[in-house]
Length: 230
Image (tube, rainbow, N blue to C red; front, side, top):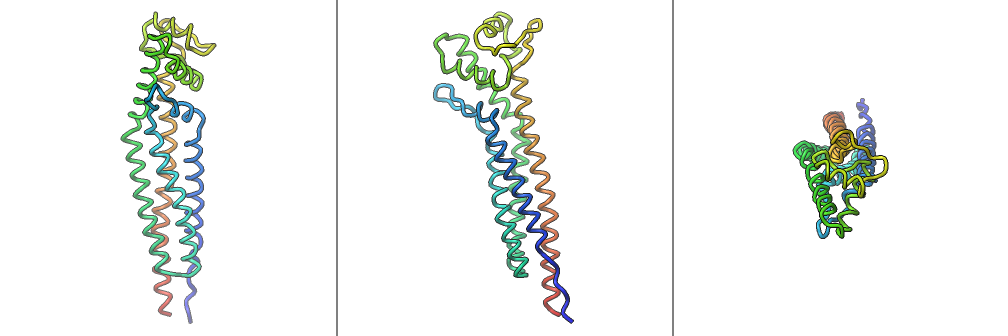
């Protein structure tokens, strides 16, 4: 009697679903109004630091390739082809390596990204306060303030804070003692740490799914090989 071969559609379906979720999350992060408003700014000839987008581009690429690989696995399952399932497994290994690389990149750069953005903001703020005709710098500072609902930094002197409040801060900003109620440095830290945290969670979830699917694809491939002898 010929042994019944296992059904192989499930692994590729889960990979397609995971790829679609990752792609959706990455595109949402890429077009999030807060980050795009800030990271498309230019201070003279210097653009805002956009290192943050590196991890997002990796997720977009991984999500798109995962969806394609899922269809490859589905076709291999229908054909019950060891070659296609082996290719499916190899692609998962490569994608897993990319996920690990993205995770390492995010861990290494999680503090540097916010630091670069804060330096960009500080340079614009300094130009706006020193030069009354620095319209570009003032526009950059106002975009930060309106996007993050903040005003300046608590590292400023009380005199500078007073000038800042009168000219560049959004309405409703207040000072408690010598401290601004809404510190832009803290707002920048909160914004990017939250985004990177979400990227890290997405990378971990996909990595776990990939490990499970790699194991299952090899088991199914071995099942085809063993059943073919009957």
